[in-house]
Length: 312
Image (cartoon, rainbow, N blue to C red; front, side, top):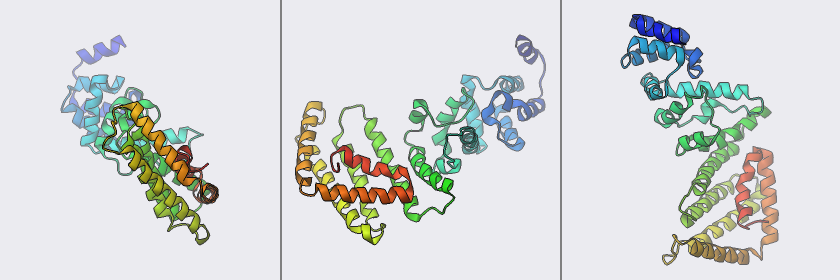
C-alpha cells in the first residue's frame, strides 16, 4: 500500500491516463459502479477530473472514494444522469444474489424516484460497496421518497410474477393504495411528540378510501360485505375525529390524549356491538377473496381494523 501511494504521489499522471484507468479499474475498488458501461464511467471520470488532480483520480480508482469524496462522486454520477441507473443495477444484483428475496423488479421500486431522492442514500452506500434498502439507515435516508410505498406495491406485483399469471387490475390498484397506506402508518410510527390524533384519523381516512374504492371492484356476491366494511371504517374514522380532534383537547398532554382515545374506543365498541357478528363474517369473506386474488400482502388492509377493535 505504501509503495502504491508513493507511486501516485511521485509519478506524473496525465488526465487521459487517469481517465482510462478509472474506466477499466474502478469497479474493483468501488463495486457499486461495476455495472456501468465504459462510456458511462468515462463521463464520471471526466466530471471527477474537473474537480480533482489526475493523481487523485488514480488514487480514487485504486482505493475507492474516501468518505469526503463520496459526495463528489455522486455529484459526478448526477451530472452524467447515472444516479438512478447505479441504484437500479445494484438492486438487481442484490435481489438476484438473495435466494429468499421475491423477484421484485428494481425498476418498479424506483418508479417515481428522482436522482435527488437517492443522492444522500448513495453517498452512504459507497462505504459499504453495495446497494440495498435494508436496515434503519436506509429507511431514514429514503423516508419521504416514493420508495417506501413502492416496496409494498412492487412486492405484491412480484407475487403475481412468481405465479406467471396476468396481474388483475384490481390488484395493481390495491397494491398502490396499500403502499400509500403504509407510508401514512410509518409517519405515525415515526412521530416523536407522543400520540398524534389527526395522524391516526388520517390512517382511517386512507383505509376508508380503499374500502370505498373496493366496494365497486369486488364480485357482486361480495358487494354487500364490502359496503358494510366501508361504512364501518367510515364511522370509525368519524368517531376518531370527533373524539381526538376536539379544540379543547391538549394534544401535548399524553395522559389526556390517552383518556380521549379510550373514550373513542368505548364509543366504537358500543356502536359496533349490534353488528359485530355480521362485520366479522363480512370482513373474513372479503379478506379471503383479496388474499386469494392478490396475495398475502392484501391482508394488512384488515389488520388495522382488528387493531382498533373494528373486527375481532
